[in-house]
Image (cartoon, rainbow, N blue to C red; front, side, top):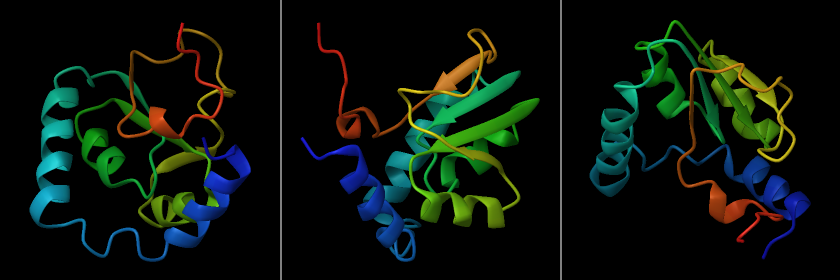
Length: 120
Protein backbone atom coordinates (compact mmCIF):
# COMPACT_ATOMS: atom_id res chain seq x y z
CA UNK A 1 0.00 0.00 0.00
CA UNK A 2 1.33 3.43 -0.94
CA UNK A 3 1.32 6.02 1.85
CA UNK A 4 -1.01 9.01 1.74
CA UNK A 5 1.89 11.44 1.29
CA UNK A 6 3.31 9.39 -1.61
CA UNK A 7 -0.12 9.30 -3.27
CA UNK A 8 -0.44 13.07 -2.87
CA UNK A 9 3.00 13.66 -4.37
CA UNK A 10 2.26 11.33 -7.27
CA UNK A 11 -1.05 13.00 -8.14
CA UNK A 12 0.34 16.51 -7.67
CA UNK A 13 2.99 15.67 -10.27
CA UNK A 14 0.57 13.76 -12.52
CA UNK A 15 -2.00 16.60 -12.54
CA UNK A 16 -0.34 18.33 -15.49
CA UNK A 17 -0.77 15.36 -17.83
CA UNK A 18 -3.68 13.49 -16.22
CA UNK A 19 -6.16 14.50 -18.91
CA UNK A 20 -3.91 13.88 -21.91
CA UNK A 21 -5.72 10.68 -22.91
CA UNK A 22 -9.00 11.06 -21.05
CA UNK A 23 -11.33 12.16 -23.84
CA UNK A 24 -11.43 9.07 -26.05
CA UNK A 25 -11.33 5.31 -25.85
CA UNK A 26 -11.39 3.43 -22.55
CA UNK A 27 -11.19 6.44 -20.22
CA UNK A 28 -14.00 8.31 -21.94
CA UNK A 29 -16.12 5.15 -21.94
CA UNK A 30 -15.61 4.60 -18.19
CA UNK A 31 -16.27 8.28 -17.41
CA UNK A 32 -19.52 8.13 -19.40
CA UNK A 33 -20.62 5.01 -17.49
CA UNK A 34 -19.85 6.62 -14.14
CA UNK A 35 -21.82 9.75 -14.99
CA UNK A 36 -24.73 7.71 -16.33
CA UNK A 37 -24.99 5.70 -13.10
CA UNK A 38 -24.54 8.67 -10.75
CA UNK A 39 -26.58 11.39 -12.48
CA UNK A 40 -29.89 9.75 -11.56
CA UNK A 41 -29.07 10.34 -7.89
CA UNK A 42 -27.54 13.81 -8.06
CA UNK A 43 -30.42 16.26 -7.99
CA UNK A 44 -29.58 17.77 -4.58
CA UNK A 45 -26.26 18.51 -2.89
CA UNK A 46 -23.60 16.18 -4.34
CA UNK A 47 -20.10 15.37 -3.11
CA UNK A 48 -17.50 13.68 -5.28
CA UNK A 49 -14.85 12.20 -3.00
CA UNK A 50 -11.63 12.04 -4.96
CA UNK A 51 -12.68 14.42 -7.74
CA UNK A 52 -9.23 14.83 -9.28
CA UNK A 53 -9.29 17.45 -12.01
CA UNK A 54 -13.07 17.65 -11.92
CA UNK A 55 -13.93 15.85 -15.14
CA UNK A 56 -16.79 13.88 -13.55
CA UNK A 57 -17.69 16.59 -11.02
CA UNK A 58 -18.19 19.12 -13.82
CA UNK A 59 -20.66 16.81 -15.51
CA UNK A 60 -22.50 15.90 -12.31
CA UNK A 61 -22.79 19.58 -11.41
CA UNK A 62 -25.19 20.03 -14.32
CA UNK A 63 -27.59 17.57 -12.64
CA UNK A 64 -27.09 18.76 -9.05
CA UNK A 65 -28.44 21.70 -7.11
CA UNK A 66 -24.84 22.09 -5.97
CA UNK A 67 -21.77 19.88 -6.47
CA UNK A 68 -18.64 19.89 -4.31
CA UNK A 69 -15.46 17.90 -4.77
CA UNK A 70 -12.66 16.90 -2.44
CA UNK A 71 -9.27 15.50 -3.33
CA UNK A 72 -5.96 14.82 -1.64
CA UNK A 73 -3.95 16.47 -4.42
CA UNK A 74 -3.63 20.23 -4.61
CA UNK A 75 -2.32 19.87 -8.16
CA UNK A 76 -5.45 18.06 -9.28
CA UNK A 77 -7.67 20.55 -7.46
CA UNK A 78 -5.94 23.46 -9.17
CA UNK A 79 -7.19 22.14 -12.52
CA UNK A 80 -10.70 21.64 -11.07
CA UNK A 81 -10.71 25.18 -9.67
CA UNK A 82 -9.75 26.52 -13.09
CA UNK A 83 -12.97 24.89 -14.33
CA UNK A 84 -14.90 26.99 -11.82
CA UNK A 85 -15.76 24.01 -9.62
CA UNK A 86 -16.22 24.12 -5.85
CA UNK A 87 -13.44 21.94 -4.45
CA UNK A 88 -11.66 21.47 -1.13
CA UNK A 89 -8.38 19.74 -0.36
CA UNK A 90 -9.12 16.85 1.98
CA UNK A 91 -8.85 13.10 2.31
CA UNK A 92 -11.81 10.75 2.19
CA UNK A 93 -10.90 9.72 5.73
CA UNK A 94 -11.17 13.22 7.20
CA UNK A 95 -14.04 14.91 5.41
CA UNK A 96 -14.48 18.55 6.49
CA UNK A 97 -18.28 18.34 6.56
CA UNK A 98 -20.81 17.41 9.23
CA UNK A 99 -22.60 14.09 8.84
CA UNK A 100 -25.62 14.15 6.51
CA UNK A 101 -24.47 17.30 4.67
CA UNK A 102 -24.87 15.73 1.23
CA UNK A 103 -27.79 14.07 -0.48
CA UNK A 104 -25.47 12.00 -2.67
CA UNK A 105 -21.80 11.05 -2.33
CA UNK A 106 -19.95 9.45 -5.22
CA UNK A 107 -16.40 8.21 -5.50
CA UNK A 108 -14.83 6.56 -8.53
CA UNK A 109 -11.50 4.72 -8.67
CA UNK A 110 -10.48 6.12 -5.26
CA UNK A 111 -10.88 3.46 -2.60
CA UNK A 112 -7.84 1.53 -3.82
CA UNK A 113 -5.77 4.58 -2.89
CA UNK A 114 -7.13 4.99 0.65
CA UNK A 115 -4.30 3.99 2.97
CA UNK A 116 -6.30 3.17 6.12
CA UNK A 117 -9.38 1.62 4.54
CA UNK A 118 -11.28 -0.68 6.87
CA UNK A 119 -11.72 -4.06 5.21
CA UNK A 120 -13.71 -5.74 8.02
